[in-house]
Amino acid sequence: MSASPVTAENRHESLDVLRGIAILGILVMNIPFFFLPMQAQQYLPADPLFTGASIDVWFYSHVFFEMKFITIFSALFGAGIILMVGEEPGASRKVHFSRMRWLLLIGLIHAYVLWYGDILVSYAIFGMIAVYFRQMSVGKLLFWGFFWIAIAGLLFFAALGAMALIPEDMSGTDVGIVPTPEAYQEVVAAYQAGGLERLGINAFGALMGQIMGAGLFGGRIIGVMFLGMALYKLGFLTAKWGIGRYALVAIIALPAGLAASWWGGQHMIAAEFDFREFWVHSVVNYWSSLATALGYAALVMIICKLPFLKLVRYPFGAMGRMAFTNYLSHSLILVFLSIGGIGLGWFGEVSRVQMVQIVLVIWVGQLVFSTLWLQVFRFGPLEWVWRSLTYGKLQPFLKPRA
Image (cartoon, rainbow, N blue to C red; front, side):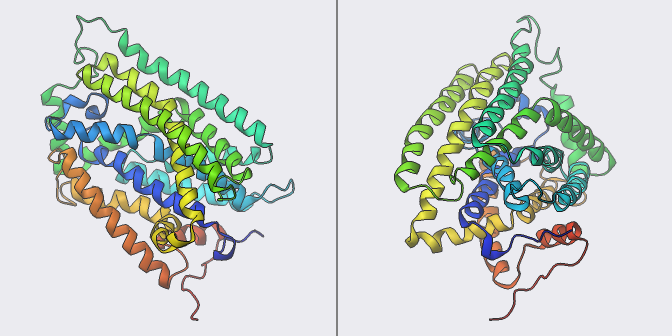
């Protein structure tokens, strides 16, 4: 394998900072899946703690976070393929495929042992496909990116829209969308006890998630990767545009995206979270999240172009350079907090307000840890393991002394 790891000299600070912010935002949307049964994600009132301030937390999370930061992260994954492999026709893809194979294995372990909501498996699979299209022009990448996003959007609409066709004389429990209180508590008890029953529930969730990831959301994932490649080639993600152009993008994209998500969230609250209305805010947000993510990215690029903010953005860049470690450590921390037997067993007992408090603690801890760690080491601990496996030999770990 002739290619070598991306070094500090040829990194783009803007990519690291944006990736770090994306990892922080992703945690906001992932944490409910660690403390609540899957059924409480498709029918929010199934959670007995979903009242008052918890509804407000859901609303603002939906408007400002849901699908926005995972979109940014997927785009950065696409950009990273070009950064590592290059655009030359004869460029070797051996390192990339080795990297993706190890990512697939790590993702499978993560999904079936720790948390069913894993995204690494999908990234590994679609990363092996996307690399073949990295040489396409910006125009073609944008066209095919939106094409696959639209195809996945139609499938998404069809899947959720089917719930709106359920007759009103049938309850959500009748069709398996709304769990009975007894079924809900059985899942809570299994997670609080830990052990094989919890692993079985998690494994089923992982399998369903991977089928959905490949079928229902596959087009979205690879489509956004294509968009990320295009934005990288345009210089958008590497802070090569002027501040005025970034500001114009943010001014147009953010109000449009956030207003649409705001309307969708308000509609869901007004409908009292009727499962037949679930498709409305979900489909609206499916599209509006693209605009919001673009606007967020533009704001981050502006921050990266202002020299006096260098110290402010450094911890976020460190967070981004250790994104793999930080993403997987989210699962380790939250599994310890939520699962009984191996941890504290808080599953089913944490409100969404308390989840926000946990998120803030993790944010601060990881920003500080990432900053301090990279003062001594070249890579995050799991980044180092992944790189060493990819290249088939131990990579340098400690930074050279000045």
